[in-house]
Image 1 (tube, one colour):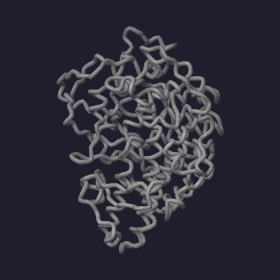
Image 2 (tube, one colour):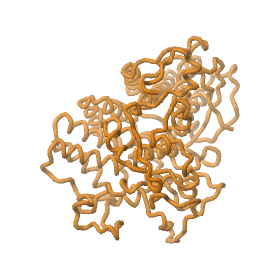
Image 3 (cartoon, one colour):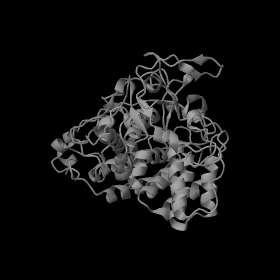
Image 4 (cartoon, helix red, strand yellow):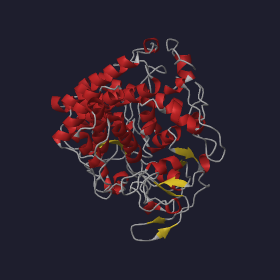
Amino acid sequence: MNKSIKNIAFKSIIIVFIAFIFTSCKKGFLDKNPLDQISSPTFWKTQNDADMALAGCYSRLNCNTFNWEGNMSLDIMAGDACEGGQSLGASSTGTFALGQMDPTSGGLLSAVYNDCFRGIATCNFFMGNIDKASIPDVTKSQYKAEVLFLRALFYFTVSDFYGGVPLYTKSPASIAESAIKQSTKEQVVAQVLVDLEAAIAGLPNTTYDGHAVKGSALALKSRVLLYKQDWAGAAAVAQQIMTEGKFSLYNNYQNLFLTVGQSKNPEIMFSTKYLNPDNFSQQDIRIEWHGVFNPRQELADAFECTDGLPITSSPLYDATKWKLNRDPRMLLTLKAFADPAVKASGQIVNYAYNGNSVTGFEPTKGANVEVLPVDYSTKSEQDWILIRYAEVLLNFAEATNETSGPTTNVYDAINLVRSRPGIKMPPIPNGLTKDEMRARIWNERRVEFGMEGRRYSDIRRWKLAETYLNSLVMPGSGTKYKFASKNYLFPFPQTEIDINKNLTQNPGY
């Protein structure tokens, strides 16, 4: 059965401790499927109790905010995809992209807030009780470091979307104590960095095995500093990861996003994990059958030709044969709607989509064609990657370019991503200005992380959303995207405003 911790933030002072157990880790307690419900009054005694409690904290990642569904939905809001298939006209993110966003909207708007605060409450509950367990101090210290990393991830995510939020570093003792006003975004991010420093100090400096490691926390710190435009700090942390050499680019871009390539993968630094038969997702059902995410033409056009030139200037580009001579990552990210799948055996299998694509494209990234034909019995267990080494390299390139311009180190980092085995895109041209390099890095992030949900945060932090998104229309309807300045932040869900009278709604809502 599913095991979780009931959210105490604003809603209840009763905590029911139940936990998920899941896979792909060396430590045995994350190598299992969900077990029976735990009795809270007799808990926090043994090593097994501590293991189960830690697994419960990780289980909070198994939600839309930290899986394929929520992240691909963000690509709709970022203008890299449209809703389609069964979800046509029904997706909350489709309406958000058109400017129809308010405190009662629900969908992803409320899911991000609720998912993150459930995770925060779970982590705080763990930190408030783990010292009761009779386990070795060294084990206890590492578990605390893992949970502080998770809390930092939850708080950074919710602050990225909502700005300042209520800040809890321990479980509220009562409903009244939980009803606090939001801290500023700067205060929240400062706490994120405090948690990450503690996590970095307490986590093992090893490769990723399903548990957060030092590299996971360093990579998240680099992202946090990049988002707050601490360019020197972000570059320094990314450089530390690169120098320590615990991670590297994987040699198979397609399998990076499939179960077959994810065990002990040197590029994966942190992920949301799944394990059949009990802890599974509907990733293949929704991508390969329902067709709920249709990549847009603009995303396809962002991929260069194999000569390293954009399609607007490359002599290799032929619009009637758009799949030829293109960056290999394009067809590993998206496909023509009508194209069939080819299994490893060479068998050709047609998709059976529930509806037509409104853009003419469907995703390929993270789609396991070996399970085709898909039906409701299909259980997907691809882990959803939240942090990978390619981001560290591009964080370094972006941050260093902002501080020092296009140095040799900037070229080296971006070219390493482009030239990974199986992709082998040519180096970017020498002699670029700082502005020209910035544009190349921005586009490299777009194509490298296409359909991974990274671009919505990128275009907001780059302050491109109002101009770029408002230039787009929805294919088919012709309705214009609408992004107002207030939309740089989500509104707080009205249910939270109603429960916590000290919470002030974000401006403009």
